[in-house]
Length: 183
Figure 1 (tube, rainbow, N blue to C red):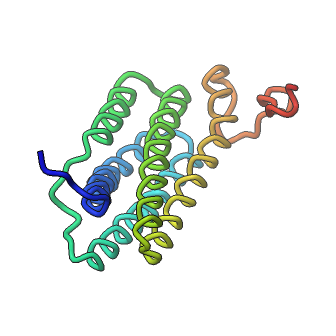
Figure 2: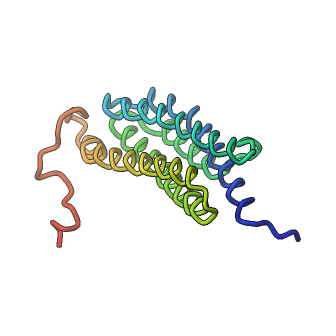
Figure 3: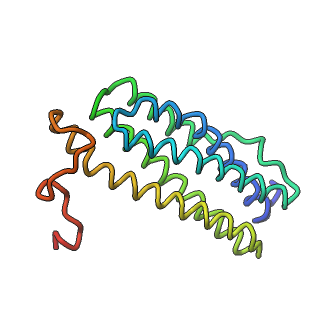
């Protein structure tokens, strides 16, 4: 078996993430269309534009490495998107929005893990420009995850109480307490 070096792994992982981002570019408009919450829909639309930029950054890194970002299919993202599609078929209304957030956060956590890993590879390989681009994307993925968490506070409560508008603010008494407040 031929030994492959870290640079080969780095390029392979970039191709995997590029595939993941392109799958997400196709899935996000469907998720936005399915969302009943205007805030959630707007969040998906905003993240679609970010995702296009994430793919562009990977293209830039690959170009600098003399590589093409294509040629690999990300099975992990394919599975996560498939689960999201199943949820869109099973649920509706506020419960669908809660399910969409669940699916989206799984995607975000997958991407956070992937970008954190390739950023570390770029650091070890001394590729400062790749580190910069990957760190920027990693921070955007973390911010998206945090925004989804904030939306879930209201949307998940609305899924329990369908009479509540999914655009209304949840009374403070119904909001989950932070870890610090529970201690």
